[in-house]
Image (cartoon, rainbow, N blue to C red):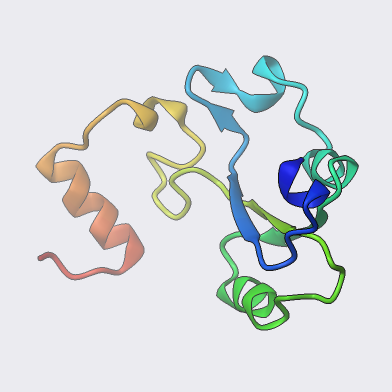
Length: 115
């Protein structure tokens, strides 16, 4: 709110909005929806993007500043563990460390070579 009040128009923040808090779904813990609306209510300009889309993220960088005279929030909708079948959207991975076999399986699913 201070950034908007001071008309800080050279500030951009990217929010990883994967729908999880430490102990559960964001919607179960906080009334976050609509998150962009909350930023806008505090005087920010807000954009929502697919946080897995490099082109959408790059566009927000290229188009900044956006001449709104306001700080900018980019809400990046993401999926925790995306692309790894046994991790995707599973909050247990917030706390777990993968085993060597799980790391190898994740690398294989992502098409990465082992280090």
